Image 1 (cartoon, rainbow, N blue to C red):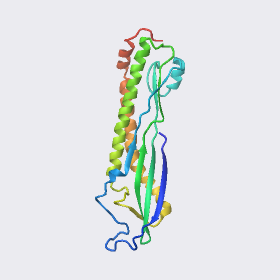
Image 2 (image 1 turned 120 degrees about the horizontal axis):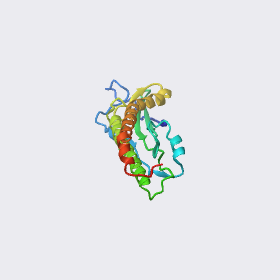
Image 3 (image 1 turned 60 degrees about the horizontal axis):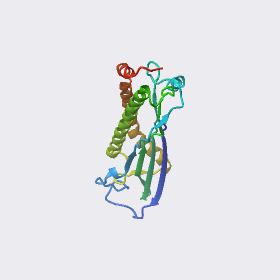
Length: 225
């Protein structure tokens, strides 16, 4: 995970004089505003790159810390990322800044996906086909969990009524603190959902690497190194 955020703050004069004199807050509120239009979550799973440049010994070093017991015969590596960009707008009403998110874009798209098959196994061998089938399962599970996480994050952001949107702007007298405050609010929504996704993914991948499933795979072929 490589969290990063870019925040663009647009400040503009309201042009409505003193605002609504009947409102206790300087910032007008519209409960009917559709917050779902503000949020966009991207999770584009890139095509896997097949790596055939490592032998079994090098692959074992590459997979250190993966938690898989026994000799590593194949490996799928996904370089996960979590980034977000926000577009913030503000209006000045009665000397107060009314600030809200005009756009929130969360991107879960991995930087890369790599599938390693040891070079000891030529493409026409049973072992190569068995390794590829297993690693494609890992790839599929990762993509499925990523898609589900994107949907959960989008729903969480859309339903977080305390996040300032045009319909419920944040009133503040200190514009200098806006960036940190709003970025922190986004993290409070996204972080727990992302943490759950990573744990669900870990458990799902571990299920594919159960010893009994490995035994079934290895019995299919007789030329393992």
